[in-house]
Amino acid sequence: MSALPAPRGPEGDAAPMRVQVVDLPAWTPQYDHALCGALSRAGADVELVTSHFPFGKVSQAGRYRVSERFYRRSARLFHGKDHSRLSSVPHGLSNGLRRAVKVAEHVPDMLRYRRHAREADVVHYQWLTAEALDARLLPAARPRVLTAHDVLPRTPRFGGTAATSRLLAKMDAVVVHSEHGAGRLVEELGVPSERVHVIPHGAFSYLGELEDQLPLPPELAAVEAPVILFFGLIRDYKGVDVLLEAFAEVPEAELWVVGMPHVDLEPLRALARRAPGAVRFVPRYVAEEEISAFFRRADVVALPYREIDQSGVLYTALAFGKPLVLSAVGGFTEVAKRHGAARLVPPGDSDALAAALNELLSDPQARAELGAAAATAAAGPYSWDSVAERTLELYARLGA
Image 1 (spheres, rainbow, N blue to C red):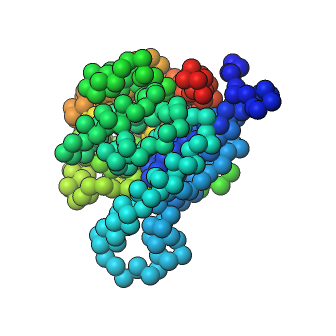
Image 2: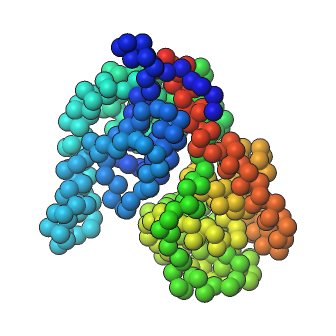
């Protein structure tokens, strides 16, 4: 890795760059920890400023600090020792109460963080939860960097685009994971092109190296048929319905739909009953020590999204060297065309998706070639050390 300029201490001695990576709601904890670990390995003094992640542990690889400075009261009430006090509250009401407590905490937490941000040479935001407010509450600490994981909010809301634009205008640099996303930032949100920087998402290779990996559930471990895997939160834009329609034309295989549902599953189960092969739903959060077993078993990973910039699931599949079938949307197209690591199909086209799946399942050599290309990309341009190098170069150019 190339040497980067370092800030100078009070006596002129070289000091490590002090970086705060900030994810208020802990929406992408695996990404946050992987980035912090890579930045720390590259010599930066890194602190992850976030909130409690309620669904389980996330591995920490590297010498960096974690400060849970946001939403501490709601974490104690709903995910800590006091959770039993709310066991009789209906789930919907419990979620509403949790959101209300988080809203009440947001402004005081942001105001307290403003003082803490002074300790950093650069503040790199991953997620801010109240864009209209946060554009006014941001600490004065500069430079400010924001990673636009979603270029625009996926759930339209009144004034949402304007709020996003105002927040982006407060940043010295905006990181996006694809050229497609960069174009949208410039064309749709008016971000000056000189402030937009494409830095890829990293491949989650560490998942295959965890010491405490868990095996597949017994009913899945006994499966002998070829397996098509859909993995990740189940949302409308991810096209699981399209995949199920395609799977109705795929004989002698199984489809595993694995992840926490954010939609009504009954329509998807109805589609599944039309398929000649078994469809197995694992409708829950999958802890990171379980992930390796699902991906190692998969013969093909299918991500039939209707729209996307980039996806952490894609970079998990790359890390495990899996052949991929992707919708030709957003940054998916760039990964497939630049690295030969995936087959592309038109979004929403179940016939094309079925044809691609049948072709790959019948051609072991084609699967092997795609898998090898995926692994090569994961170890090269999508390695976290490469991502950290490019990120530190950006910080240095901003004068951090």
